[in-house]
Amino acid sequence: MGGPPAGLMVHFARADGDGFMLCNVWRTEDDMRSFYDAVVLPRLAEAGLAAEDPSVSTMWGFARP
Image 1 (cartoon, helix red, strand yellow):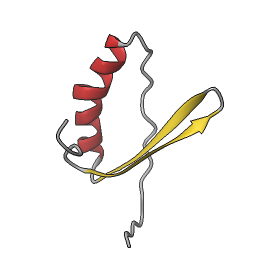
Image 2 (cartoon, rainbow, N blue to C red):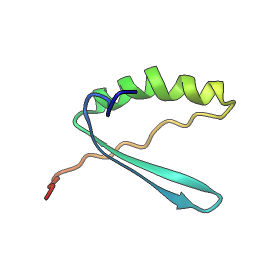
Image 3 (cartoon, rainbow, N blue to C red):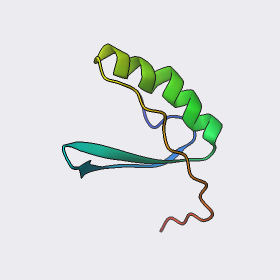
Image 4 (tube, rainbow, N blue to C red):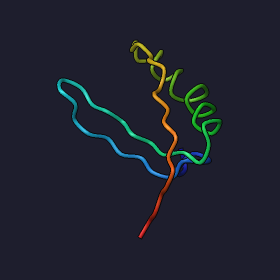
């Protein structure tokens, strides 16, 4: 990849028990779904990992310094 995917505003990851949690902020849910379907799902399948449907929440405010 040559930079962030279209619509991605923020990405971070953190340890979560024995695994990790990813949190991404997208401009639209459609941007997220497009990336998830085209990039994330195929890579999880290649790695033999189970896919989970992403949790989606509406964000009411966002500020960057």
